[in-house]
Length: 271
Image (cartoon, rainbow, N blue to C red; front, side):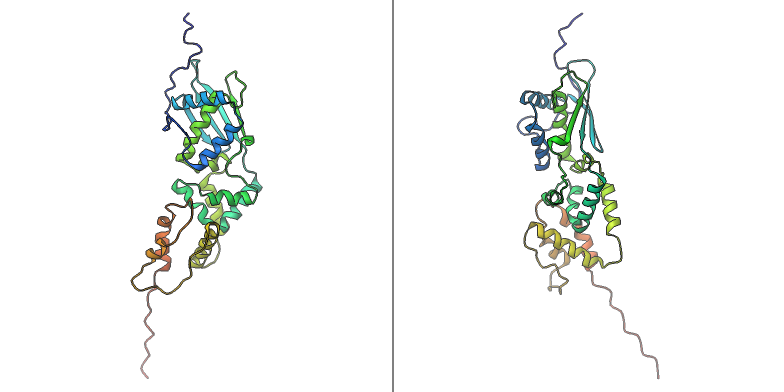
């Protein structure tokens, strides 16, 4: 029997990371996740994990609520089974998140645009809820004999997950056990009720701006001749992490601020 192949990494066949050198995580939220893991990991195992991930050794990556399942090709014929578990938010924490975002709804919009606003992370941290998991909140399980935390196979999954977080930042919610669609539904239900939509939206925008700096005048003032609602919206600075939000809100502002049709006065009947 030829034992020459044992101990050598076999071709993985998985997707190679987009980043083949330098920093793997490209956005601040994925980098914070990687930094948290790297602070508690062995440098050698982490380096081998980066090599594995970049070479396509992570042949399957399956994020799900509270965990990530993966298969990583190593030196043995069969890929190793790896599972990263992340501490899920408790029901009380989810309720606190919903109540907070109801008061600041624009902070959730960038997640649909592929962004994580720092204001959202800071606001949740202010109520004692962390969006991005710390090292102590992540546990590793691998079918390999190495008991490292993480082993090189689990480290490879961490780096592959970092690129997944870059591409789909709403995965940060999935890791906490909450899907973005479910969170939005709960926020919508909590915020429903008889109200003036123009007034409510103005108030929510005002609250969002207080996190980023001075608030421009958002009152329902008289139109300036020659300016449109879209011009007014372009003047709004929605703060860091809200790129594209103005474009999302534009049609709503146009619809809500459109002049109501004029009604003809009732005709007087003949005496």
